[in-house]
Length: 252
Ligand SMILES: NC(=O)c1ccc[n+]([C@@H]2O[C@H](COP(=O)([O-])OP(=O)(O)OC[C@H]3O[C@@H](n4cnc5c(N)ncnc54)[C@H](O)[C@@H]3O)[C@@H](O)[C@H]2O)c1
Image (cartoon, protein in one colour):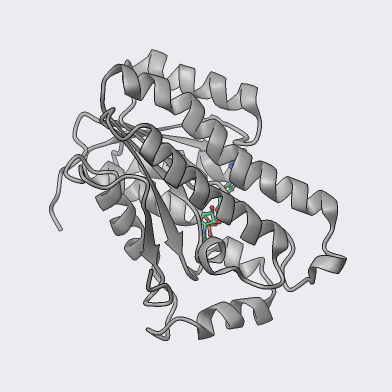
């Protein structure tokens, strides 16, 4: 594929040090974007930035905890100060919390932590990326949700609830900014093999994979290609929508 849809554009990808986020950074830079990775894991973030630099890609990084308001606000201001623009924000940072644990045994502190990162983090990233985008009447915001938030997966109350919240946030913000030139969409993947899936209980992963009609997990490249389409300048008539990435599991 020889697209160059993001030349001259500046993007932030949270969680871009690993997994889906890193694959999305790869795709955006390969199409000309300058990307800033926001991730709280300094070791993997620095390694990812070095790896991209070696390949001649324009990638920087900041230590950011997406659940921390001051950290988010300062890092976004830093990107806008440095580059004078912000075109794309993909919020891909996320944690899974406990899996294969019934609600009656689910740890309340873990529930709070998962909501803080996955849902509050999505809100904070959108809240502070919107102003510089609105100022230029252009922007693409993509919040990574999950099929868990649409269908509900048992045994992962924190994760399922947080991702349902992200789906609601996408729908509300999409309508709120529909006339502004800034689109807000979501992505709901089923199982894509990453460190997060490695951290989940194997019985849970089997439950989720068994429900994919294509009878396989998704690839990082498939996730990155779909994300790049959603945040590209050519995608102009979609907002407030949560795109499916489930090999046919979700039919709505
Ligand atoms: N892998 C899947 O099957 C799958 C399915 C559905 C949805 N998702 C979603 O996709 C996103 C990426 O998942 P992944 O599988 O690539 O996970 P991953 O664990 O491979 O990568 C997540 C990245 O986010 C970073 N991160 C976590 N918490 C953070 C925080 N508070 N602040 C900043 N960075 C933080 C991690 O350091 C890591 O680099 C998540 O939102 C996840 O819920 C993944």
